[in-house]
Length: 240
Length: 250
Image (tube, rainbow over the protein chains, first blue to last red):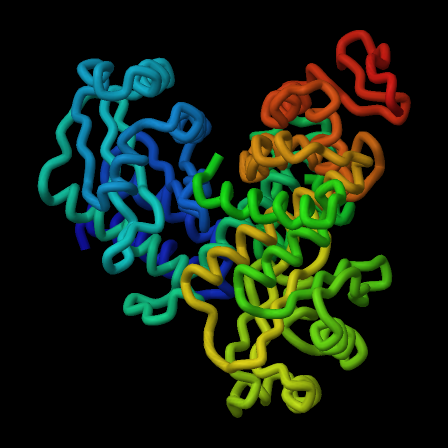
């Protein structure tokens, strides 16, 4: 196996492990954002998911800058991710500096975060989209057809991972799975706050602590987060 | 604010006006029942883990709600600790009955063929569960399920506000929408829960109450908390740098 093929293989194995063993949706999405960075050769990725009101929320991002940018899309109510979700079609922005007319509030924010290009892929479910995956590059660039296809495949993997089934018949099950995913993220945000205060850390560092603890002790991220919100575990987590 | 939630709030406000009462949780439950063509009941989580039936729209819903608490099984029981709706469109279906072997026949005997339970919670902030009870078997339509989710959101807001000692006017309710999904709001709730030694649920209620008291969006207060410009102490919320309490209401 060539070194490149081996890298790709390792990324897929890591992703498959998260998908199969004792599934934890936020951990899976977190792994997928990182896998996407590795496989697509982009700088950062983010995943937005829609709730029952059609409002998008950030559920995973590979870096803090990506997080900031995704949140900026939501706050400014504009951006490629929102467009990809609404139109259910990929949105390419190879040069963000030239996009200020399209996204007058959002474009400066992405540029300020150090990104030069952004591409968004819809997370598709039959005739709808459940969210969007954003790909960020430091330099302006066009995504070639191969990379765009692989990117869409990864966005589809994200959708399947959340919904556990490709051919959904029942809207109830889709709703239940989305509620679960969105709710899991909320528990994690609450746990980050608890931990940040207990350990006197910045909130973003708290996520790293949670995730490291979950992996080291072979626990689900969701369970660790839930325990932290109940006031448990903080001594163990402080120990590192 | 999400478009879909406006009719929900308006229906709740209309229900309260009919009773000439300030808007409360009961009106959300009543409006939900009407929107979904069912009876409805709200149970709250209690310290000992058993659900406490709080309000029901009719005697039969009340009965089946309490039945679940007595038997310790049912969609309501599962919704109290879960994060997704628990939907049982046909209690006579063998697989459904197998899941709740004591409850299913007892509910059917009382004329309830379908139960749909929705957690009233946001992450670790838990209030309870909102349950619909229907005479006829059949799944909720996509619209009805959507409505149930929105009404559960409304019940959560109203319950948190009630905990925070608030009775917002109708106009304030419609405008204050469903912003609880913002990451910072939840992080702030986590931090406040530690600062005040309270549950995340109460922390969220505290945050909402402060937003109301200062007439500022909850996301702004949350941003201040997360940036450590504002902290909550038992003496009152304080700017973090000088430690002097600035709140008068605690």
